Image (spheres, one colour):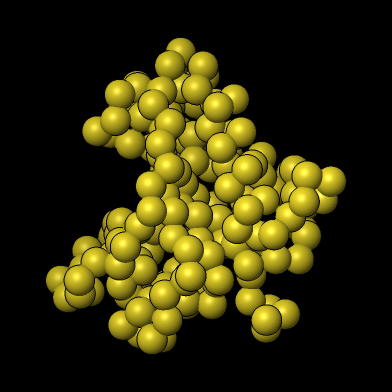
Length: 162
């Protein structure tokens, strides 16, 4: 493995000033605190996913996207496999979704990560504010547990690696 190539790239997006939209960044920052700068893991937090991220995605062995979901019930925690979109033509350069980013990495660099997953938490509110809705607050322990286990599996960390 290339030493600079992360085994697991965590790519979280969300606006921390829009209530539950900040759940992705909150979880990603907790992962940074938990795992520190261990080799094999890279965490990137952004307000939105942009085309510039395609290069990092193409360099990772596995990617774990984290975002809130506006279509899932509030507080619902889900982990989905992500497939690259069929093509990257007509991309919205202001906001991309996980399948479009995978497709962009494939189209520009000829590579798709071995594993691509999306962890979502259903948003109860995206109104202005820094606090989470009651549903998301209640779901954060389960979301963290799932994120922790998934990072350990994708990055090859043992339970004692901290």
